[in-house]
Length: 260
Length: 298
Ligand SMILES: Nc1ncnc2c1ncn2[C@@H]1O[C@H](COP(=O)(O)OP(=O)(O)OP(=O)(O)O)[C@@H](O)[C@H]1O
Ligand SMILES: [Mg+2]
Image (cartoon, rainbow over all chains, first blue to last red; front, side):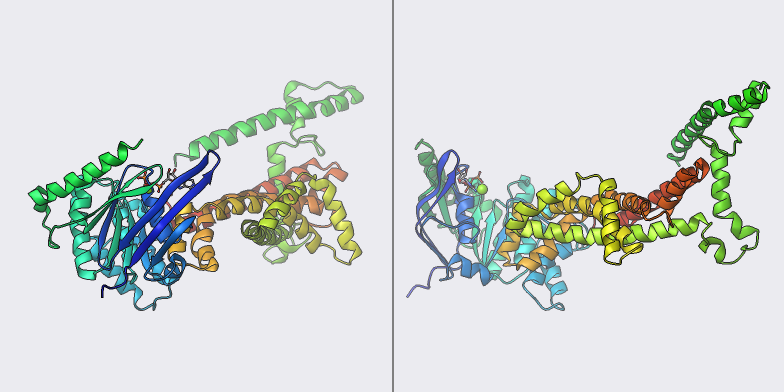
């Protein structure tokens, strides 16, 4: 018997009613994500990647179909604090030091006061920010702020991590480094990760499953299961296998584009 | 230090203009006196006289300075009240009146801040209040305080309240407004993303208020407080006028104008200005300290 999927969507649709008429952000999306999957969402701007993540996170209500998270409705999952969400922008609170920003979800979730400093220190080390606990957000570079926001999403024990273009604003070198760290973290914690990106190499390098989407209406056009091993040094990106998967993703994106 | 020179320059300029004004405005009286006595005055005599009249139209700066000195510090240094606490608590001391005005101002400012904040919370959290309260808040400020103040005094008097409380109500009436406006804006200042974040952590409404909306509103609050504290002082002084001019800087202003005592008016005015400066300085200092603690760049 296969274990129940962590996230499953069936004919999931979401239409925004706007002044210029309805916008079909998602249309009949079927998708299953299993425990421990690292799923990348890739597709042109406006194809509904963010919307899908937001529906899973119960920040947006679907207008059709169903979605379940850990076998629950998104609302129940949110109330059970089943996931950590990393937004496109870091969104740290400017009046809180980095350490206190990371402690914020822990305070809200009622973690034991004595336990909080330990957790904060641990996740700061995880994202290479040890020693920046007392600094305020404006004293950090954009990339460091983004890492702090990832640390914040990791500070509590949610086994799902939803990440919306977390590395979009970072330079290539930092990005490579964070990609490695993220894989490392994923391997150690066995979290299920949903990761939105615009970069084909990033998607192929990180994922066990790549979801290719196309816009107007937002649909899933291809789901590619990666054949790469779990252990992935950076130079795997030059292997023929890697290039082949990347090629398939590119083809999928092109097919979606020719749609309109 | 960079600020000292410009400030001194402006003060110097004001004093020069003030002296010129005193000469111009008081000359008529001197000339009238001279013609009535059938004498003539030289220009130097004229200037000297305009600056030392008993009841000048515009008292010269040094006359106001002397009056201020004589009604504040001087009684504590010499005379029968020297060295006793009474030198500042008696009815002739301007400190006594300034303290009365200050205490009412602080009470009105405190209540106004509290009331303004509560109203703002109601407006932000309750749609019915948002639609119904805000127009009234704005309308309340379109009625001149000079019309409202005597009514408040009379109505309060009818229910047996005199002195402190009616004046504090008038101060509150002026000072709650900037707080409402600023706090509504401040409590609504968190971005959608920050609110979404709280939602992903399943934060309760009160957690969102205390940990997000309230801290986000602090810079807006202090901007409002600086306006509110000055407004409370104005309200207090206005409130002191129709109460029979018993005590407070407003009463001194009114009494001065009854008896044509321009020197008294000007010294009360300068005292009020000093008080306003002090209050705004204190609010500013608290603002700085809080901002620093909250990590905002200076
Ligand atoms: N709150 C909203 N109201 C109306 N339309 C919306 C709303 N949010 C998103 N949309 C629309 O839904 C579509 C999908 O948006 P979404 O943000 O999911 O795209 P995306 O794939 O994340 O794009 P990007 O790569 O640019 O971030 C877009 O056409 C967008 O205009
Ligand atoms: Mg997006």
